[in-house]
Image (cartoon, rainbow over all chains, first blue to last red; front, side, top):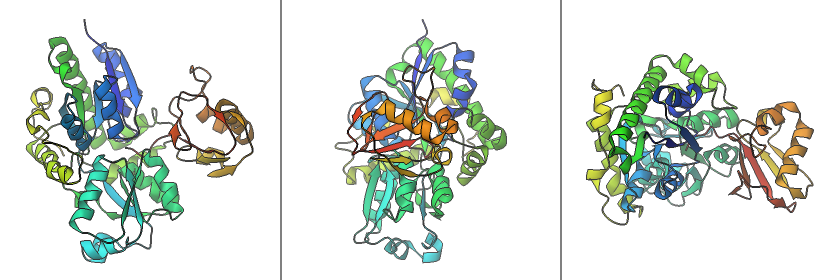
Length: 309
Length: 89
């Protein structure tokens, strides 16, 4: 008997979850029942994996590494996007290039708070890594359980900058005139913005593997749609994201247009590059098991050609 | 209490913040806000076909606590955030 899927997703609109929810394709094409669960950040989703409330999810890889270090049986079976972390600040703040380097750039934030999603999220880890490499006195990291609260805090002057997803960046642009001060590729090249991660037991059974293979084929098709036909993808995505318009979606897609379902070596290497940073930040208490992070067999069947990132 | 309309709701509410005198269940507050701000807000905030009566995609934080499926009694001193999540995580 084929089991249903309990799927965790974030509101990040370039994740294919929104296209698959809008189309109903998982249920219609794979014949499985889906329960979709929205989470504010990746670390919250890991807690749901831990209790078995979610068995497949869209999530950045650092929270997955934290889960693995705690014994949560997770494995990444596909990619989705790379370089999904961007920094924005008010119009008076100089960009990284304009400031002429890391220290003069970060010195602009001395004594201020930088807003970012939850501790242990990919955005939080990248920001803390940046601040650790280039220490500036008095810069505080302010974590938010829901990134949607960040634009208001930035607009009110409670924050001097924000680090998060391209949708957060576009929201800050629209709502408080912020601009991008570090582009996605500058913060952490090829960082694993999100992947498809499952509880490991879903890979054991042949029927489950068949469902996962079918899911990854739909995911791959949706990644291609976003990359090749963003106008069409935007029209479909807004069907499942109330409050979002097509112009917003297209602007978000363009911030970091690196969409693909594959798991090339560069994706794996970038993910494992987080391990020492996360150990240093205290997010990993022991040695995470790098051998157990990825299982590339299914995605190599679905996506045998070179990566499109 | 203070009510803050964020992403996806600020445009239909026509404002970001509202100071309002209210004591009672959260569901009553939502009804009062819809009466006050009109059908566009009601359409995004409520869903009569959903068991909770609310749009399942709307997030409601009361003093930072996620009360998505709850109907807590409000004392009138809280800060309530209402939004449709779109900023990612």
